[in-house]
Length: 125
Image 1: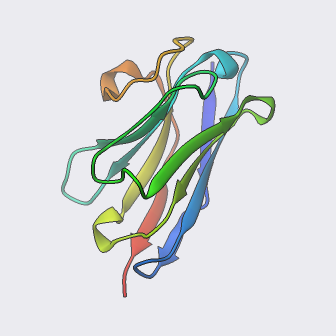
Image 2: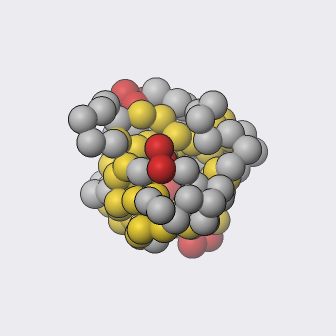
């Protein structure tokens, strides 16, 4: 069993930066691809970024490409999402997700077995 705990959310102004962290427990973390998703009020959960088991492959949603960076440190069982040049439309609850032992990165929500509780990011003037 894997547990994921996100942190680092908050309220910022447009143009600011935030770094989200996701701490994982469980032995399968280092062999599993990880992802970040987000859900704004009244909208479906959507893909943000994903990273393969060793960090060698990353994929981003078009809406965040060039502004967000996903990374991981397997020795710390942690995945990060660095968010720069934040916009009001980035406001959402951000969720960390983990595949169950699958090493390939994926943008499909259905490919992820483990989910964190979410952390709120609010971007407002």
